[in-house]
Image (cartoon, rainbow, N blue to C red; front, side, top):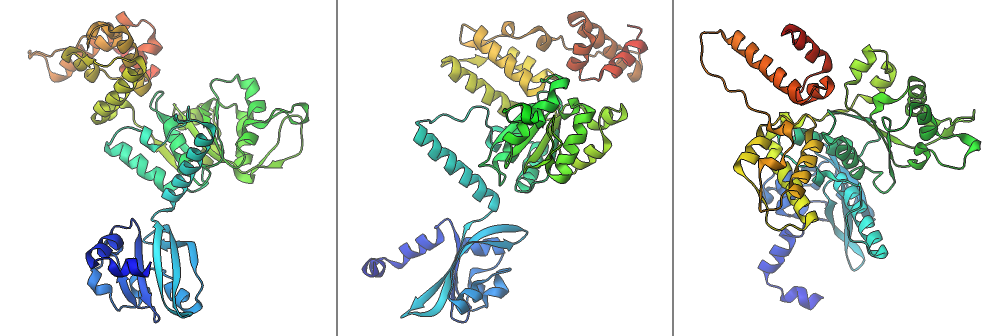
Length: 444
């Protein structure tokens, strides 16, 4: 080894230390810096040459390099809080003839979020290798599955990175089909609980009289574990929490406050360690006004709220999202050459997508399967996507009168194609009450 290092040219050594994918520093017996690589200096916003000879504790916040020099004890994977975040650092004493003459420190993982994510990824990969699996885990999503780079989506992703390592409950709000499940999975995958199960319960899919038993269990009368018991140590994702009956909301509140659950037919409370992520397609404040959701439970889960925008409010992400869905569907069908006609693309791009990404996915999948040639034409699209556009031509009417005429025409055409008022409201992006107000206004 000595011969190898001696024979290495200086420029090779420089490239090695500057491209080691780590930040590191070397100090002498007085804990003064002998060398700090360029990446570390950039992170600390300091000139590399200015670090030489300075006490390490003047340059690196909360460093313990001087303690390693003094004690001669190494620190492996030691948490290091610097610039508002925790990192994992190694600190190794340097000895010559048994005497400590300095120390070497490196930041192995620059962010604890990355460490937990990598740890989970490695474990899952090894498990798949052992099981002979190579495919992506079904129904398991990660941050990379959330497509889009709009300001709203980037803000949510940043928030997820910040709060994922905590055990705080999270509320995800957004219209149906916006991908709230993807965000819930991403939080779990980036959390300290990523090695433990993520258990989902869809409150709208389970009859209300069975929800309590499904969530909390039936006690000694059944050997079947409840969803909460299955999630112990991990994360419980309560989808459509607004459908949770009020009595069950009380028990959920106790779980959040005291960390205990009490199953049916039992008066014994058992401790559990579960993180709660909840989602709702309807603003919970509206349910509170209708006395369908407890205020105390709302304030317990809403401190961290992610508001996922509907697709129509982030159309700058549309091309990326549709490209991902399109190519994924093509690969599943085995079709190699397929494209949208310009007219088809215009219809897709101008539609409001009341069903959001889920509706877009269903439309694209159907269009691919319905197309026998190389081009997807408007014939492969459902009627609601091909609604006729209203064109405005100047007249003697006031602006308000013109807007009302266009609005009335849109309402009439939508109801002609979709008589069901609830579905029509979804297509128009209106609440049911607002639609009825407009129908009354225009005497429709």
